[in-house]
Every structure is written in structure tokens, then in C-alpha cells.
Amino acid sequence: MNSMNIHKVLEYLPHRYPFLLIDRVLSYEAGKEIRALKNVTINEPFFNGHFPHHPVMPGVLIIEAMAQAAALLSFVTMNAKSDDKSVYYFVGIDNARFKKPVTAGDALILHVTLERHMRGVWKFKAQAHVDDILAAEAELLCAVRDIEK
Image (cartoon, one colour):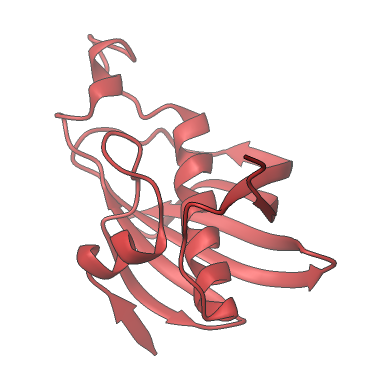
């Protein structure tokens, strides 16, 4: 199994602070699966308002972190990197469920498996765990599209 430090992640993903939600790739197998890490810290900008008295990572950002892991899996599977000629879009989110709040100090482990790739659309099964407990899950549909200039 392969892994990636943050410098390699930055080569593949166009996201940057404050929207980069992957700190490290723990393992991946192109065309199959990826396991990535998001360290959730109290310094996250969203904690100022969500919620000041009980900091909870917004569910949409957990989904986004899973999608960024899926994008990494797509790029390594295609043997390609993000560039300024295309963008990686969500095209669907199905069966999203939130099982456990994610809060400051948690290590969010993202596990994404490729279900299929057909006509430019990628389908993934994604899960996010904290301490081996399922925090969230969803089926994600994503596509790489050319940017019109």
C-alpha cells in the first residue's frame, strides 16, 4: 500500500487553507480504495460559529473531506494531478448519514472505496470514523470537468 504526506496531497488536490480537509493519506490502492486522515483542531475557522459553546465539525465538511479523499483516489487512479484546465465536482450525494458528532481533538479517518467509474462519473462509498466508531457515511458521485474559459 502507498501513502502520501501533506506535500504530495497538495500536488494532487487544488484545495488550500481553509478548505483543504486532508492532512495525510495513510494508504491507497489505485482503482480500489484510500484511507486518509483529517486532524480536527480547535483552530478550525468553523468552530468560531459552530458552536462556540460546543464545537462540532459541520456535517457538510465531513462530506467534503470524504469527497477530497475520493478526488485523491480518482487522481492516483487516472495517474493525473489537478490542474487549472479542469475541476473535480460533486454530482451527487446519496444515503448520507451522520452517526457521531466530530469535535476538536478528533482524528477523522476517511475510508473511501471506488464502486465504479463510467463515462467520466465516479461512484464511491465513503465512511468517516473517529476512534473506530462510524461518524458519517455516504455514497458520492463525482466528475472531472473541463473549465471553459
